[in-house]
Image (cartoon, rainbow, N blue to C red; front, side, top):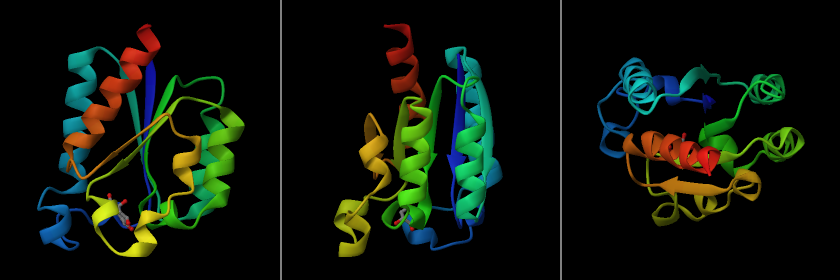
Length: 144
Ligand code: DQA
């Protein structure tokens, strides 16, 4: 099984950006944790981060036919991007939306998620563990 983990804008700034909300673990550390978890649960993983909406759409399209699950934290594009929603719908690969913070307990504009409409689950507010939980969900779904 192959899982693609996509992170959107500003997630490359993990460890630096608003540490009271997102913690002090860096993006490089997150990548290591995800790769370690992939080994533990026996899945192949590819990591991708971009600050650009079109690049995220391209990456989702490229996954068509070669990827069994997508974990996606679209960052701020969660709340604005119909293009990312449409890309996820187009490829129809099972996808789980992840947010490090509890978006439903923050500003009102963060409570809207377009991407959610194309996801089989959302994990929000579990910190970095949310990525690992999303991988577990996709793996269980793929096995059944
Ligand atoms: C985020 C929440 C978004 O509202 C924000 O724009 C982010 C990160 C999260 O992981 O909690 O960039 O997706």
